Length: 356
Ligand SMILES: Nc1ncnc2c1ncn2[C@@H]1O[C@H](COP(=O)(O)OP(=O)(O)O)[C@@H](O)[C@H]1O
Ligand SMILES: [Mg+2]
Image (cartoon, rainbow, N blue to C red; front, side):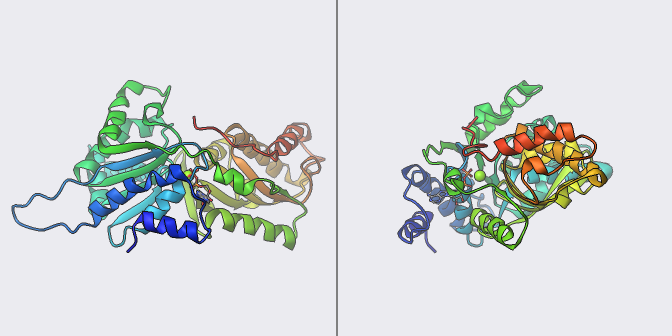
């Protein structure tokens, strides 16, 4: 099977990828890890298993192609037990598993939970590592320690350099050993490409489709399939012990219908968790609202506030222009701000954040 380098060259030849020296500079790192993991392990009673290769921490601004490169890498792993998962989703699973272990009376829940991961995979590929939550910050050090000790290789993408992880977080000094561990067990590489391909792809394309009909539906579908290549799966967010399922998710982009998010008893915490997990949301079928659905209107205000604060890129289809969505009922005054935010979020370049 081809190396990443070979596949990358082919994709450029076929016009599917643009030539990008910064991206190409990372390929040898991926191929190094791939080659080490594909080398058959010689078994022998007294033979120590070989040291796993150093992983890769690939960081840089949004839309530079980090996730694309990681996906390409994962597709080249042949039969190496590999798991590609959004970091956020992985940590939610870990917390759930630790909770279960504690219920069974296990004191040190990290050990069995990590052992379970070690049993299943040799390579973990995390997309979008970010640590904003103290419950994550306080366990990742020991968790990764156990994963590395078990011979797992980790590659990850991130918008921040390791030293900026969990910046200004509570009890950050307890978190610092984790940063050292990353530097010791992973090659830290900055993807310096000057091109934001995602912004390029969306440039000039409208982000607010109205009215709702078969044409606008088709346009929404075309954007979604262009952005995700048809790959998507549900994302489960754990919010205050509840589960909130976002129907479609891929590479930090989500798609849902208005009814999924605003027609259900969800609130600020749920929308903040969503805004935290995605960079782009496609929201279908925003209806015109009135007195009878002021609850939906109120939730929509909260949702847009959360997305706006987190500078999540929004692409939506709606029954009417923002200022015509909610004209009578409780909270129409507050809705004016939402309408204005919806306008602002349509502007070219909105949500295009530099690496922080
Ligand atoms: N060299 C390239 N040529 C063409 N499209 C690219 C290239 N690199 C990335 N893209 C596309 O740009 C978009 C953003 O890339 P992505 O990997 O999601 O960025 P990041 O993870 O760094 O935010 C994706 O649709 C991706 O397929
Ligand atoms: Mg990405």
